[in-house]
Length: 381
Ligand SMILES: NC(=O)c1ccc[n+]([C@@H]2O[C@H](COP(=O)([O-])OP(=O)(O)OC[C@H]3O[C@@H](n4cnc5c(N)ncnc54)[C@H](O)[C@@H]3O)[C@@H](O)[C@H]2O)c1
View: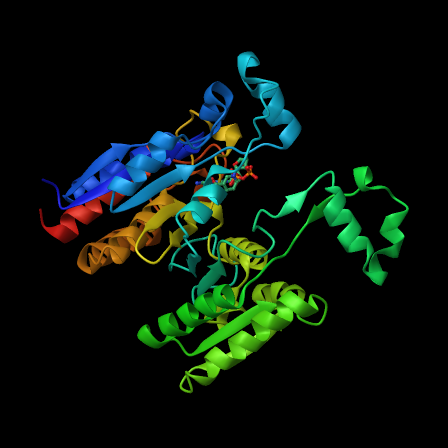
């Protein structure tokens, strides 16, 4: 029996290419795992009316953790149009399967490291950027509590608030509402994990990215909780920044920052920005982590314009596999993979179009094979 059971979810579009590439590298490392394929994504919405079939949840529950490529998500009207005709008018509503997975498995923490590897020509701000972002993953603006049209009870309750007077005349059928809903527990958990990570990894500072001067209740709660957690870690500097200012500071002097912590949407925004500083979506990895389960996915999506071309950068997915190895406690393998990736980046001989320029890139699989070759050398196998 293999040491690990991994749920294997390529999903849509280029998710398939980068997962195939990752398998080549994991096999070259002799990583001892059984991979169980699991269905997720757009095709299953179109044909079954469910982008996250129940059988996939069963696979996930049997596995130690899951590796996930990418999915395609589309707005409500397009989703309805692409649904199989026999499934229409049955009240089925499209939902993002990855958002649902995060909620269902309580994957409360989204970890996104953004490190500039020397030699990467896409390192916008030099080679010394090394940020780690902790994004709350199940609450906040992506908590999924939203309506259109507004239910009458919600509309009436809101219209009791004097600030809502101007909405009264608009009519509930004309108003959409998405909430930013946050709990003390959710705030505390993400802040504590950021400080714990900083402590364990010798990081100097943790910065909260919020907007408490405008989002006074949710932002205020997060800020108070952050300060009280920070008090427990006197050896680590704690800073606070507004999301808008932080976007500017990250572009200007990312070297000044270390560990960042934010609610769901702000974390999403700064992690894409930070990814852009160190090579873009082709290099950006992510882990969705719960108390005893995790789903690992690159930051990028299904990149529809590159579907079936085998041209996108597999590095993001390979760095994601590194996060998986770390989470599983296979630190030596994680370090070997990291060294192999760093070597391929610094040599720059084999690289995809995003690094070499359009029309000059090597294939997804060529990059994976080069990483596999390096890993095999390091492993000495
Ligand atoms: N977690 C996810 O699965 C996830 C995340 C983001 C977007 N999406 C979905 O993906 C679809 C496409 O969304 P999008 O175009 O906004 O974002 P995307 O990340 O799929 O692609 C945007 C662009 O980034 C570049 N890119 C992405 N991955 C790359 C890689 N590995 N190597 C090199 N370049 C890469 C490409 O130029 C691509 O056109 C949508 O349906 C969206 O909902 C899914």
